[in-house]
View 1 (spheres, rainbow, N blue to C red):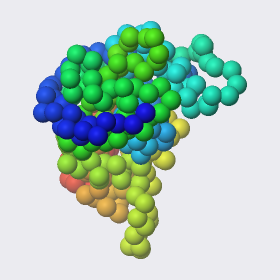
View 2: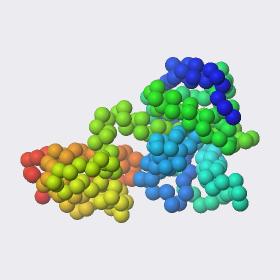
View 3: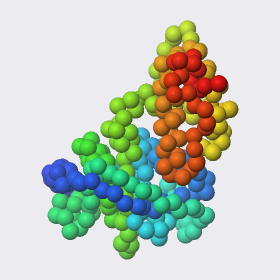
View 4: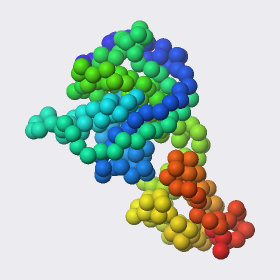
Length: 271
């Protein structure tokens, strides 16, 4: 199903109606991706895309209730697996409740004339291309999340898609540096110094509860020895990550005895 000729006009009208949003949504995940670090990483859409999201962009999906969350999760598994063979009716999973605070979101409902004009194409159960085109348009116009009806035939649940990468870019100007510290850079610079090893690669074997001072200190000391400014940025990023984990009850506190100023001690973490 293709989009109507005037879909951009309707999408722009929806952008003008954008509003803040706060609420809780359910997210059902397979056991293999049930660790809290993975639940809101957005890596699934970055690799495969999804409704309203092209591959390459990180986003997180949620549903207004647990039944919708599970049905949507099963439908996604079946879509990625293809039409041939058996269909998934039930499989082990864990459901999380995610608190969402959005500065600019749009709600696609049949009651809105602009949304009703583009919804049929966006909710095609077998084709994501139209919704991805609309999602890209909304995202580039500052929209951080979309609430939309379920595309499952005969089902009336509602979902939310949160462009988490949009949050990172808008709320923190240093997102590119943070991303490079975490995941590395595709650009190879020949400086004569030891190359930066991304934090994700260094600590991939650890859970957030396994991130102790003993694990963190050697890494930050090593960075401080060759790039003190980068060590400060890395420490600030790790602090922010732990504060996020504390807010979501994943850990109770940050590792003790962190230095407030690594430049004074010559080390990112105090002795």
